Image 1 (cartoon, rainbow, N blue to C red):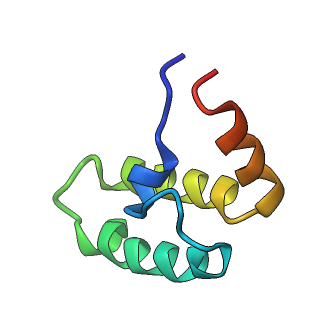
Image 2: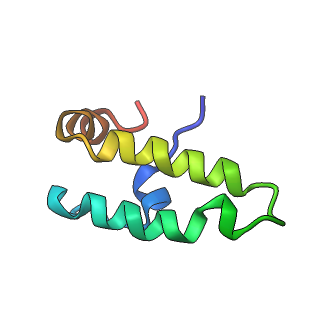
Image 3: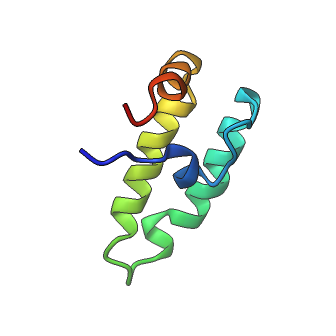
Length: 72
């Protein structure tokens, strides 16, 4: 299974404070939302990947594990 860089998907550096995760997610969600890109067949997949990234990085415990184990 390939490593997925959630920070890259969210468009943020690794040292982004936890308090800014929701803001970063909302900003990217507005960019990737499938309704804004009806002609892009990959829009739904991008939006789903963003949701997955936020589910991990938005939760302090999951983020800590992700940072600790990364691609291992």
